[in-house]
Length: 355
Ligand code: TTP
Ligand code: MG
Ligand code: MG
Image (tube, rainbow, N blue to C red):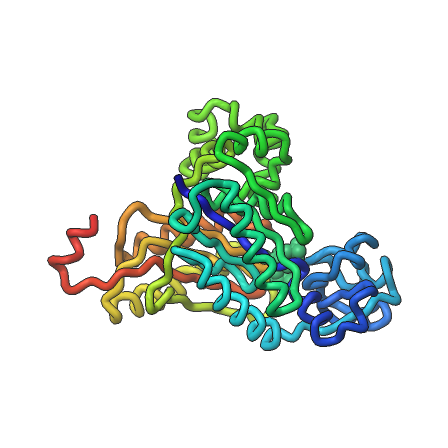
């Protein structure tokens, strides 16, 4: 039996701000761009749950947040500070897992299959982790527990804020069924719209759908959402190597929405990444495209190949596919391409062994 946890910090940037200034704890706290008396540009990065009760959300224009609660505490983003807190949290979490995978500044997957013997034990184990994070950092988090990464991630969403949610294997399908499409891991705004046009409303609708129809409509992505809707996800919690990944980023001078220009930039990033991969004699299995839209809205899209490769053309095809499947059409500020799940190879002869 596999047991996976997803630990995600609650309202992370704003919670870090509360730690260094506890006097703001009982007030609405918004971290993001300067609201400039309602005329500020830029967006909300995150806000505490008191601010959320006024309707303020991540990604919302800061001017609207100001309109919703003008006497909230508005603070600028201090990434170096949050990064340093994050590094300490990750170091602590790592000790609780057989396999550990950090997925963003405030969340990580922990495979604890060899550390517990049952779901009940997993729940107690999660409590221990949660208490330990609070004791060390005075920060709240939420934890999802499930048979794979997909269920752990979605259980964590359901656990928020400051909770633990256990979804046993036999409960997984029933847990997913009533949820809205957008909640399904991997489904973005655009694909949700397309799925709605096809008449799907809930995750349960997709679980019951004709698999072939989804594949005809969406290709391999169609198969993936069908499996996800049924609670199936075989992706491993990816244990990091010494070198975790190789990546390159490009920030556009102006935010742009011209698909062709963005794709050209992705292709040249692929050339750079592939050349670095080759130079270091690595082979990769996973490709991640990062799209940062205007403001702080950052999206990561990952595709796992079934084999290790160094092939630049393959990398390009996957990167472009990830862009086309996920691009929301909003203006793009920054684009990043990263390969991970690396292994070291030695010369041509070894390569073939990986296929
Ligand atoms: P999240 O974990 O998505 O959100 P959160 O921790 O603020 O709140 P929750 O309790 O719902 O988990 O993101 C982690 C941090 O990443 C968040 O604190 C700030 C940053 N972030 C942005 O800068 N912009 C965004 O649009 C989002 C979603 C997050
Ligand atoms: Mg969080
Ligand atoms: Mg997070």
